[in-house]
Picture 1 (cartoon, helix red, strand yellow):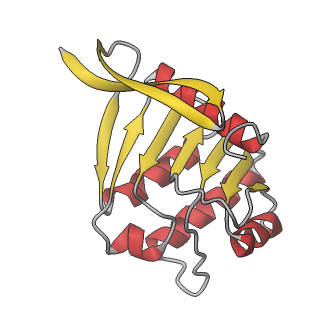
Picture 2 (tube, one colour; picture 1 turned 90 degrees about the vertical axis):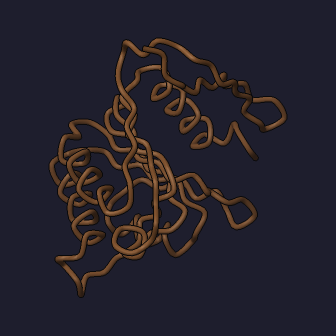
Amino acid sequence: MYRARTTTTLRARQGRVTGKIERTDRTNGATSLVLDRDYAMRVVELINRAEREIKLCIYAWRSYPESPESAIQKFNTALIRAHNRGVKIRCIVDGYNVKTQLERMGFEVCYIGRYKTMHTKALIVDDREMLMGSHNLTQRAFETNFESSLYITEHEPVLQFCEYFEQVWSGHVGR
C-alpha cells in the first residue's frame, strides 16, 4: 500500500530549508494522526519511554502547578521525571519567560530571540519517535481546542527533523 510521506532535503540556503513531497511504500515505521485530547495521553507515554534525550520545539508552554491533575500538568510532571532519571531535555523557544522557566527546571534551552518565531510544535524522543503538529503545550490545547498532530516513527523524516533541530540549535538555519 502506498501512503503519502514528506521527505525534506535539508540544505541551508540563505537560511531556508527546501523540501519535497513524495509517495513511497512505508516499510520502516509508521505515521498516525493524533487528534484533540488524545495528544495528552500519547505525549506522556512517549516521554515515559525516553531513555537518552527529548528534543522540544515550543511555541507556547504553560505550567499549572495549582492543577496537578490537568493533562498539561501531567505532561510537565512527566518531563521533570524524565529529567530526574537522567534524560537530557533540550528545548528551542522564542519566548524569554518560557526560556527562564525551563532553565529553572534544569532543561537546556536555545532561545532564538524576539525577532524570530519558533512556531513549530514538536517533541522528539531518542531520535526515533516524534510528535509534530498544532498542539501547543498549554491547558487549552490539551483539553479544549481542536488540534491535530502526527505521531511519526518513520526513520527518515524523524532523522531529518533531528538534523533541522540541530541546525536551529547551533544557529545554522534561520539566523
